[in-house]
Amino acid sequence: MSMRLSLIALLATVAAAACIGLGGGFAASTAPLKWADTSPNATPVDVELVLAVDVSYSMDPDEQALQREGYIAALTSREFMQALRQGMNGKIAVTYFEWAGAQDQRIIVPWRLITGPESADSVAGEIARAPYRRAARTSISGALQFALPLFEGSGYRGMRRVIDVSGDGVNNNGIPVTIARDEVLAKGITINGLPIMLKRPIVGSMDIENLDVYYEDCVIGGPGAFVISIREREKFKDAIRTKLILEVAGRTPERRVVPASAANPRISCTIGERIWQQRWGN
View 1 (tube, one colour):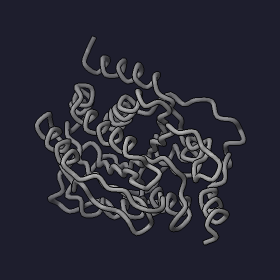
View 2: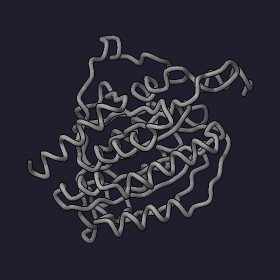
View 3: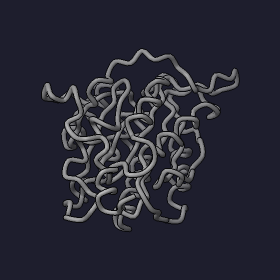
């Protein structure tokens, strides 16, 4: 079996173990490449990947550690390296930032070029050395607005550009998430999601039962956009590895059957703002 066929078989096996959904209504985008780095010295890569990681207070220390360890393990995995080598350029550009409220984003790893095990290990090391922090509020829209201009001066020219959002809650701060999402999609950029659903929602919390549906209908979009949800701690690292492999390989999970009603959001895209208003009154 060729290396390419082996990779496809691997992806099918790993993806089958995760809960995967596709974003409705945004699978076929013909938007022109805007806000890309078009300078003549920009390095061509297979994908420019922005990793946007939730550090709001709803993420407990254990979840934060699992999330970070998952990215470190994924970037240094044999499967990730195999996917990297299958690309036309055999290289990707990646940046990693943490986000919470609308005005709270912090770049942990600026744009880095990954071409093989040594550069992947270097990026993983930068992530591992960063101090942990947590902050107030959850603004997915703020994260998307922060991520968008990062592509313009990245120094790289990707065949694909992807923002990868991971988090355990709904937008409750900043502009409506759908407005930020649509701004990103208009630039020809894909948004993928990694909703973390390890805790059952309790009365009085900001959590919702169907965070994966919220991500599918309100957050992700663009060509080949997908969601991989995490419901069990022991599958955390596998889910992150699956997501990164699919993004680097430029593959999309098999489209699942979505009810006709999914043409419209199955859940209110302002549910987080409403819950916050009901609880805090501002």
